[in-house]
Length: 479
Image (cartoon, rainbow, N blue to C red; front, side, top):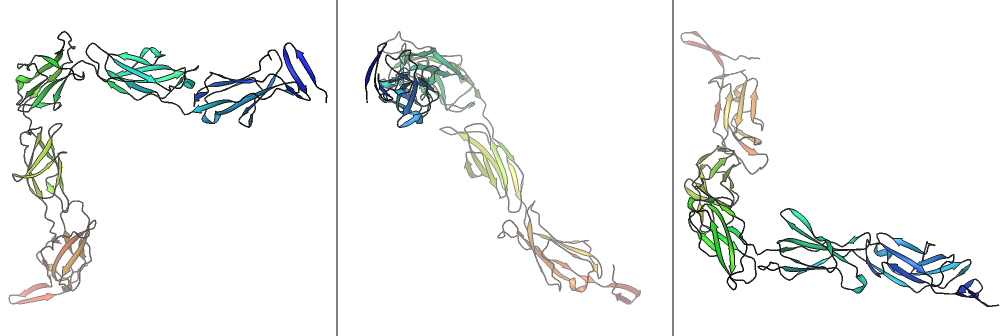
């Protein structure tokens, strides 16, 4: 076979049949990162050195798999991990091909999360706190800009005009900070970093316990807190209450009164440098109210058969509730609600704090129990029942909405069915006898009432006085 060496415009090909061995293509990435993240956009480009102006078509491979693209470059939007791999290309002019390029490996990683580091969480007096945001320190994952955010008072602020390229800022304001990275066009963002709370050196006045209402006689502590590491402080207070706190970080009021009511604020001065002073804290208001009285409510005052009554004791937040029955301690609960099934005179008080501060006693409520002993009644309730009359024998249980199964006991010839009443449409002597009943709860078969008292049913004949010493009794059937 003949071979020829061709030279055209500085472009050399060694022709061997249909294969032309010429300049070897190169695969370029744009951006030039070989390590990118899921969701980013990347373009692969096939470069043939010295082949400018030639009419080329291209063939691409990822690994050993051909990619259907005849273009010099193609773009992958919103890449996934499946787009990673070794890319190679070759060019064709006419029926001749270049050799395959070397493989350029593209790695697609899962979406990264920014990392936030801090040198402190409290801003020192006159100073600042350094925050550092990073994504990945490897040189193959460069090009990040960093976006900073601060959240305070229900409002999010974007810091430093949107972004910083070096990923480090100094802050002197308190708030909740976080960051994220971004790179490329359009911008690809990382996951947000974890948040960090930065406290300022501005003092905070707190109440301990932090109850919304303080009552006369309670023990309360007003405290000035400065977040500034191991710094030692002198304290100054400002208040419009009658009693001014001493120049210490806290003021313990052992028995609060109206003279302690007022607005409190504080500031600190560094002991090591008396000219270093914090700002005044925000003002906190302390209101001392008169001693409260617990309120007792009952959903019912009669305990139904097999049931209970709910009692509620209330005052305000932070209370524990102490219950009394007939003047004796009954139970202590935190939720202020109990269910009782015993009769008695109930009351409650609230207590909170250490030492415990008690409210005034509530009013009392009397709870009574309803007897579950059934009653047998006759209807009509006549003193004399005559043969042929209609009469109903009824078992009555006073127990609210409870459903019962009934049982009868009698020495009459005919025994009533197991229902709450027995209707005798035409009374006869066989119905005469003593009747008593009891009930069994349908929802709990082991709960039964006592037996009722017995009621005697006597069915008599109808008698007529015909003469002064002669009485005639006859049986009469009444429909």
